Image 1 (cartoon, rainbow, N blue to C red):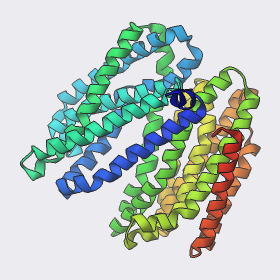
Image 2: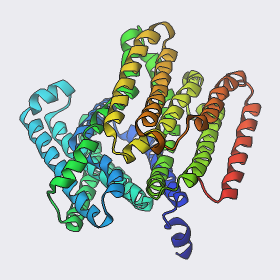
Image 3: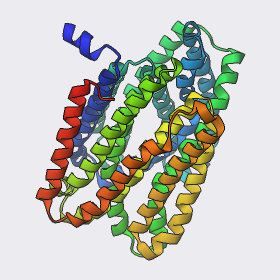
Image 4: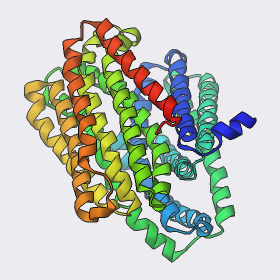
Length: 473
């Protein structure tokens, strides 16, 4: 217990990164372990319905809570600590009003919505409720990130995942008609989240004791509303490639399948970035508020070294990992991994100016950058997919992600001038290193010993450096 309190619950960036990463590892492991269980219990048609339901659930979730959780980081900086609990309960009322409005509109037009989405009216209603439950859990997760309570997020994730799996299996076994078993899987996911959401709603209102505060709402809405088109644009960037491959290439099912596999595999790197960014941003806001710029710049180099090394290692080692987890039909996807990883690396770089913009309460430009990037992605898809196929879609993604980084970096430099403490020359060597790893990968693709040797050397280097610094950042 003394070790846990000293090393894991001390709210340092190391402990926050540890809990963020271990949470992702456990949740992904649970998902992987349960795949054979659900594939045996559910039909392919069941999976199709669940997939459609999940897709539209994500869309509903973007709107249902007005993205008020995106203001939490700024609130921890610009609102005094003694008022923050009141702020949380006040903006939760705002999100609740949004949920009620969307719920009533959905009930009123459930018939047409059901036909458009090709889901039953019952599932449409369930979807709205689950989207708000997911929003509440996301709200608490954001609060825990900025209060440096990542261990609480681990507990929430574990409870939600384990209960969802157990309830889903229980409900599926109690549905006699095989064709309706998707309902059991969906309800199994809904109920644990709903119960946890209700609990946290009660806790937040009990602690904050404020249902309406004009000042808090005026602080929140200008920050949160622009995040809606921002997130929607990122959904377009991630999903439009597959849709446009389908529309622009004949007999495209195979290409879509390979692209989806490659994209989902490369997303592992993006998931690692998300875990690290959650730990970084809580430290970053605190240090920026205290004007510890020298410390930030020192930690920045450590962070860049860490993720650049992880990206390079991920690219170099990816072929053998794909061969272990996928059959030969998917092995062609390994050629797409380096460029996809480059796109995700630009997303990592773009997080630095965007985190600063959140700190400065400049979310309108965050939304504008994402909208332009989505349009760029669609435009280059039209240009590149027909002549280059899947490679064209990936190149379009890389270009749009690179634009995001350059747009936000230049905007922050122009808008905030000396307040923006990052310098482009600091990022360039790391960016160049990742770019050079890509041709090296293709040159050594058939020489796994050399690739793994380089990967091992990079791993030893970053491990020794981290141990020497006694810090991830």
